[in-house]
Length: 226
Ligand SMILES: *Cc1c(COP(=O)(O)O)cnc(C)c1O
Image (cartoon, rainbow, N blue to C red; front, side, top):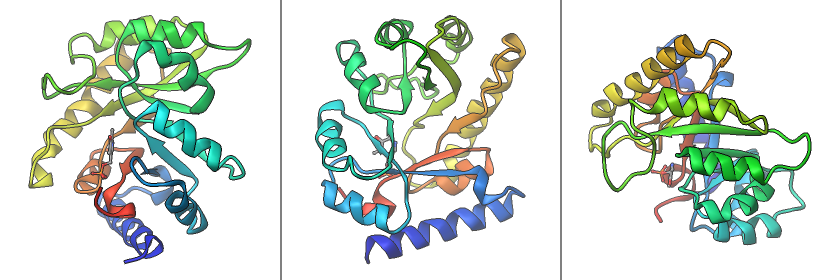
């Protein structure tokens, strides 16, 4: 199966999930997660029409972003970011999905150039899994408030990596909880619109779309197994 065919299948799955849930496919941004794949495969996906790509490691991404600088790609960071790489991440990425502490937010803020605003998403750990980063459900409102005071960061929404389930249907309550958490944060901080929910990966993005995802992060279903 070629990357182009894989993308067509993913887009068909997006269309069907949208039509089941009364949403328009334009409301869902497909972010192709290209970690571990070389720049040449990213170029193929670009030629097949994709414009937004995500990576989970700053160092790995830096090389590929440089190799592909002739293409107008929007780069997203979706993996945990160490505070000592905040400055580098700001230079490389247009979106940070994995903001997971006030300390990191402050580092990103300090690395800003005059007048620059960086769109960020607050990663929430709803499964309470030790191995996953993200703020706890109970801290999310407080962290969102602190982040919203940092003028060079533009808090656009929430991001979730739910626990893995064989049956994607079991992830539904987590996607729903993220949407409900967004409502609570909006109620507490009415100045924040929080339009984005980054949730859903290769095996569960249809369910995420049904629950309101605006950004889905799809790797395997586009590039094949890692
Ligand atoms: C790897 C990764 C994905 C994509 O996962 P697939 O199952 O390959 O679609 C999505 N989000 C994050 C944060 C990832 O690290």
